[in-house]
Length: 158
Image (cartoon, rainbow, N blue to C red; front, side):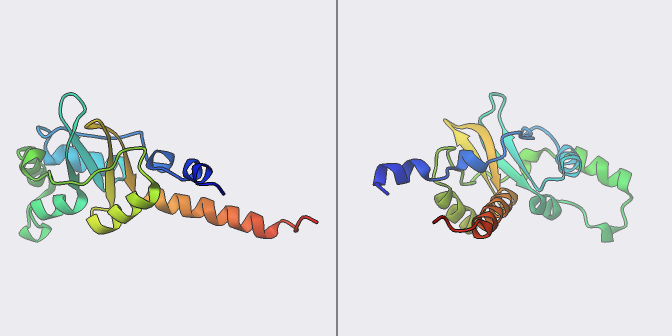
């Protein structure tokens, strides 16, 4: 296959990223982040400014590290009051690596493996346009395994 054809056939981040996003701002609270994570069943929330520009990330692990232990014997209502008084900006990660939507998927996979967040925000000109998660790669793996099964099931052409 000529190099030009090979390049156009390469999968990019855009091909598998999630572009229906749930994002919050630095002024939103830990309570809002927890509620969003629970309702959307997600573990990562990108943080944007008023213009939709990516400024940080809050993960489920960050939330756990910042919360009062259930062992402290605090009731849920009191816990919610505490969370509602803490802005996300106080705990969000700001040194988060991100990727452009046109980046080769292989490069993004390598970055995802080294970052240990479980996700890569997808940023185009500083604007958050998507997120790439381990789940996106699992879905791709299933599609590829199905395609391989179909190829193996087809009789050879003669």
